[in-house]
Image 1 (spheres, rainbow, N blue to C red):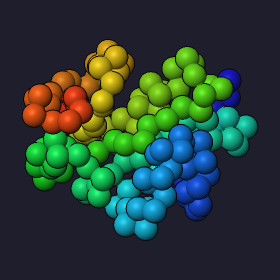
Image 2: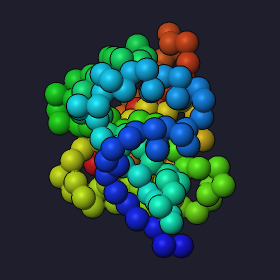
Image 3: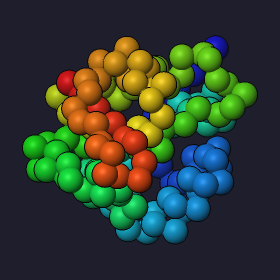
Length: 150
C-alpha cells in the first residue's frame, strides 16, 4: 500500500466526503469558523483520501459541557484532535495509527487532546501514547473520556 500523509490544501470537501453524514452535518456548516484555526491532515492512496482528521487550535462550537470544562488545555498548549476517520473500505489496516504517528512526527513538540464517547476506543488511544486525563461523571448526558498526548 503506497500511502501519502499530507496537510490538505484547497477544498475541504475532499475530506468531508468520507465522513459519516452525522459528522458532515456538524462540521460543514461550521467550517467557515474553523478554517483559519484548524488544519485537516489526510492519508491518501492513489490520490484518494482514505483517512484523516482535523487539528483544532481553538475551541469548537459544538463542544460538550464536559469538554468545555477542560478548555484550559488549549491555554496549556494542547491542540484538539477531532473528526478522525478511516474510510470504511480501508478499516483494520492501522491507518488511524499511521495518521497519528505522522502527525506526531511532523509536530514533535505539539501536545494534543481529544474526547471519546465509546469506551472501547480507550485501548486504541492508550496504544497510541495517549493518557486518560478525565472521565465524565454521571451528571452528564453521555459518558465521555478525555485523553492527552504526551
